[in-house]
Structures are given as structure tokens and as C-alpha cells.
Image (cartoon, rainbow, N blue to C red; front, top):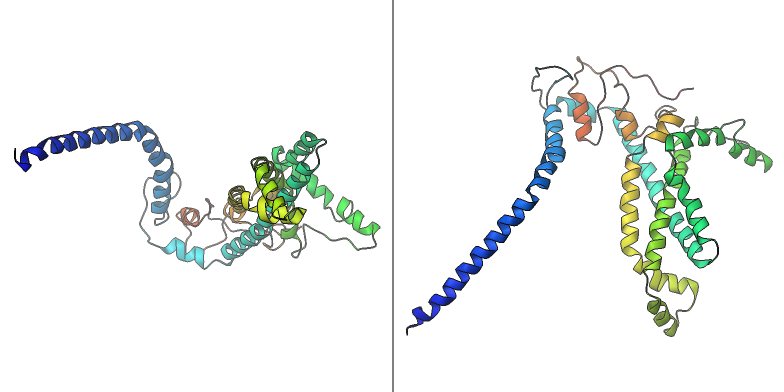
Length: 306
């Protein structure tokens, strides 16, 4: 028997295995094709349509449009309000993300350190997450009122003059960031509590044997490294929500005073500022392509000047 005859069975087996794997791959693609088609139709399709409309002067309800290239984007990127809203959103996220993560972690550690009333404290700190922000913003507006607000009354009791928190350019964005931290830290706390329960006790015992029996040593050597994946998830989720802030801004400050608290989503939902030459409705898709939503081409009045 020649070497060629000995290789024939192996070749046949290889071909049979390849055909089997190809069939399995085909069945796999067939199984995921409905979800893939929905993903393309509901996610990628609309995104592509928005990008295409941003390059035209198409108006809602119109059956005709003209290609105008990047004119909408040039208008957008030369608009000072666009950059002001974007910078406000970045500052807001820079305050809310670390504040939410740190406060959620501290509260989770305190809850797990005290065995009594854990369920009550978890529920109490999680309530802001369950509440409607537009309704709670009204409560915060009352608390931050310049004359009857609880915050200024507390400052007055300590001999400190009150501040018009929501109508002062220096404090409006900071006040909204504090509200954002208050709303989000409960969810971060729940996630950190779950992460703490997943840390094996053997790691703490091994750290104690190595001499790391102090609270800070255990936190630095065992707890924080084991909470790394949970912390990353909390940071990503909190950042996403920070960039989407809208309801508290709209209810409390309307983006004012003088756009000092305008956010990206809040700015995009307003009637657009005047544009010259003649404005077109191709501008909103251009803003959407830059993380903004649709906006009508009307003259804008300065928000929140009350």
C-alpha cells in the first residue's frame, strides 16, 4: 500500500469533519439571523438614516430634499452654545461619576459592616433610584429655594449667607451634580453590596495571616481589587447616565442662567437658535450625529433667566 492510499482515509475524514463544521456554522447563522436582522433594522438602520439626513436639507413631512454636504456640521461646530452645553455635560459627568462611585462604595461598606437593619438601609438608600426624577426635582427645587429652602435656612442657622443655588451661574451646575449623585448612588450601593458578598472569606483570612489585619489594609489588599469588575461596571453605567442628564435640568434650571447649566440632551431638545442663511431641518440630524437629538430651526431665547 502506497503512502497516497494511506492518506486517503485521513483526507476523507478531514473533508467530512469540515462539512460537519460548515453545517453547524450554517445552522448557527440561521439561528441568530432573526436577531441580527432586528439589530440591523432597529439600530444600525436608523443610525445610517440619521447620518444621511444630516447631509441634506430634508424637513419633517417633506418628500423632497437636497444634498448640502457638511454645511449642517459646519454650523454646528461654530455654534458657541453647542460647545457650552458639551463642556457643561463633561463637567457634570466629572463630578457625578466619581461622587456616585465613592458614595455608593462607602455606603455599601458601612451597610455590610453593621449586621443590624441591613435590609432597611438598603431599601432607604435605593429609594432615590426608584423615584421619578422630574417629581423629585420639584422637591429639590423647594429645598434649594433662595428664601424658604432648607439648604439656605441651614446655612443661615450657622451664620452663613444663603445662595441662589439654581439661579447663580457659579452654583447651578454644581447643584444639579449633587442631585445627580443623590439619585445614582443607591444603585451603585446595591451593586457594590453584591460585589462584597462575592468576595471569599478565605482571602481575608489569608491577608490576616500575612499581617494585613487592619481595616484599611484589608480594604486595600483584598476588597478593592476584588471589586474591580463591579467598579468598572458602575463607572460605565454612571457615565452613560450622566451624559444623558435631562429631566433635572429641564425642571429646575431650564439650562440657565445664561446656559450655565445647559446639558447636551437639554440643548438639543430646545428650539434652535437663529441660523443664517435660511435654516433647514437637516441641522437636527447633524446634531444627533454628534450625540444630540432633533431641534427645530426657530430663534432661541436665553434659558432660565428668571
